[in-house]
Image 1 (cartoon, rainbow, N blue to C red):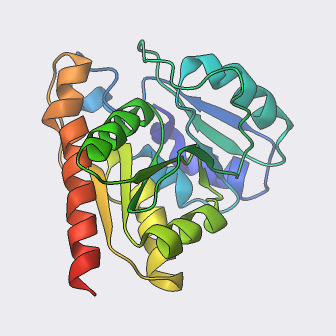
Image 2 (tube, rainbow, N blue to C red; image 1 turned 45 degrees about the vertical axis):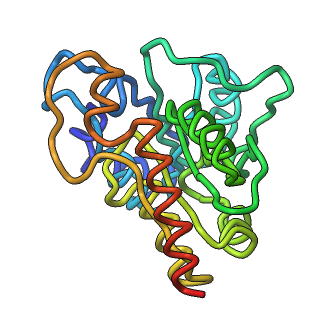
Length: 235
């Protein structure tokens, strides 16, 4: 319910650059049985639009303490979005995130999947499916939505020529919006966005909702194939 206080956040946290940290739990569709009024698929877009606000989306609960320490030390307001549901661990003990710096979870040369939050595991599964089809997919965890890691995005655009974004959020204004804006300005390549397609979600089991609203492994695979086809059609 952090978005209920947007006016206060804008004026009292962001305007003065106050060192206020906001924790957004039950993000995305994870409060799955309480209906559309309890789903949060616009928060990244809203928080990202506020001047001075940093926006962070850890991918797994195990890494949350590491992020909380960095966030506490970060100068200025921060919105941290996380999930209270049980989600798979995707990284081992060598994972050392740094705010503002993307993490390459898998190398690839044909397409890049830029992903945040709980969809990291699904993005890695999608990359494995693509590999079985002879397609090399890079997977980049973009845990910091703002400031986004410009160099990681532009390197993906230059070296793979096709990008997919995946997020448990509306396709409007969140990670997909941030990536598409940067790519359009600096190095235009095909970008396909995976997420909730401008609609309210219903009530149901969490994993089923992710699948029903366009965030399944097959949805990510299809988006990657479409991005690659668009790249090829451009010559």
